[in-house]
Length: 239
Image 1 (cartoon, rainbow, N blue to C red):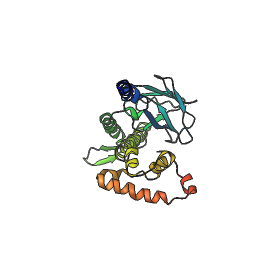
Image 2: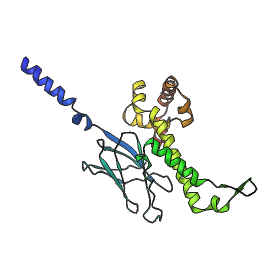
Image 3: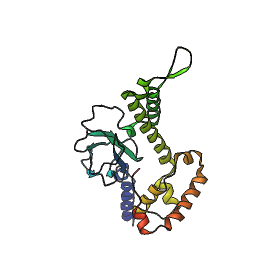
Image 4: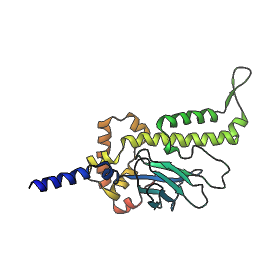
């Protein structure tokens, strides 16, 4: 009996070991075309640290085994290969740029930015995108070069992308699979469909407290249960 207890403790210790726990980590995300913001399918997502690889699906989504500090690469014919270091397991959005695109952008992989750096980049792009300039009379005049210039247009587009990422992070922090599965029996594909269809707007998430978010999830689940199979098949799992 003593020997059995010792053996059980050894197994228990191994199961709780960080290495065993880390082996279960999965990183999920989306691969998008930078200019159009559309999903890219058949992108090769490779964990350079572990050697594992997967292909993004028709919605641009990927799901790959990864540990913290692993390096992932994203490659697709006609596009620049991008990479990121796994710092957390929030949903990632990776943007790839065409090889023919003359712009070399340092901010393409915005999901690798910390929240503070993201805010910093947003402010920088906001300033670059400003098209109002002070005229000599003290009023505000519109400069055509600033309104329609390629740099201004690009800055505005990058700002919108950074703003979208910032909003997505706010939503992802509160509307989580962990919370949904704690309140509903949803699992697997149904869970993914629910998360896509009932993903709340950022304005609601900013205002909602924990109780209001729970009520929203329960109300949404009751609506989800009434959906027909054909209605579920029309749900797009993308952003």
